[in-house]
Length: 499
Ligand code: SAH
Image (cartoon, rainbow, N blue to C red):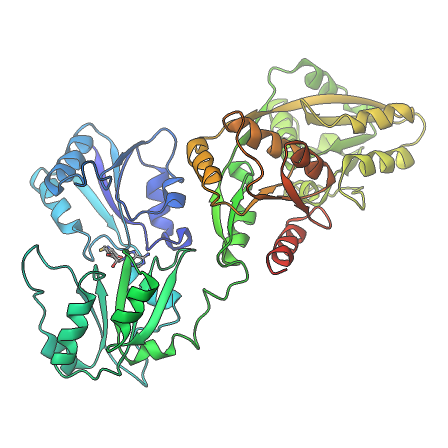
């Protein structure tokens, strides 16, 4: 028998998905999702999972509720682990309760992972604390949605009497009526009020005014759904407590092209700086196996004096190969290790090894120059690299008569599940910057897209000179970090954006 997990996906910022919600998505066989769930959360879905969009408007009608209930039941009966993913929290105006009824009737196992609701998170991202001891001691969450043809079923007198903060969801079209009825019930026209559109998302917009002036102001700004209406004196704090709109990269859209397993830090740091980050993994590394040259090299490690690694992926593959050969890092004890840069050195450290040499400038030419200086007569170098590695390194070593073996241990595969989305975003110019952390990510990016895709509508943020060269060759505008680190990339981006 299958199982259904109701998951609240949070209000939009992918960082506001809960740890438990994320785990449920990663384990799902089927994910049934709504319109309000953001693309970055949908991108988490395992590629093997079946994804059913029930928010899509075919003929302007979303999939009816009874049919959603049936889909959940059918999939659970097939023995699947089903995740029902909803915007915000699943029980707050989310019809979560209705979806459980049929499951209960049919004895299907289920559990519920609450989500961060937009009713609280959206005000927070707009600098509005929904309660504050100097202003108000209660908060009321109300739907502004009226059944077609009927009046809002809200006791406005009671709301005004309670003096709490009022948060109205689904209220864009009913805001004029709500504010009018509040004033009729005795609320002052000077009471602060705010409307926040697409809260917690990079496109967040807010309008802060008063109950008397908000309608005019929101119409001027052209506010559309999804948005929430907040009424109460706490709205006056919004300017002073504003933080999200002030983040240094607020309003910038950046695509990150690193392979999935390495994108974490860069993506997170960009998001913390306020950027809208589109993750676009377009390269993957695959260990070359079976691989006779590497088996031979590992079997005669004593002939080598230097080990050279030119990427974090190379370190991972080395560990994998040692494991497969029933060996471990101790087999390298007699060798010195040279790496291309800080990222590779860091990866090496994770496995308990310190790099003996890192060039001052993180590229193959400087690595070659260093090796030429350091490798003594009679010593031999083992390089474990990508199948198609940069030619400069072996060429320069050969010219200097350094003896080495250049063994390819992994290959790079170029593809992306999000290619159509990316092609559409490039076509409408919605991406400002794309990060590239190696020449191969540039190739991967170009290869993953349809031929003839225009590469001039964004700026390529490159980690170093050889990446920049590849990006320029692909026709891109480029900016390049002062040194090959993520810190320097982020610095360059901020400087460029605030120019
Ligand atoms: N269960 C959801 C609410 C569903 S009702 C939750 O807990 O958040 C849908 C309404 O939520 C929208 O009409 C809008 O009023 C509000 N909403 C959801 N996400 C929002 C966002 N990112 N910004 C502003 N309002 C949002």
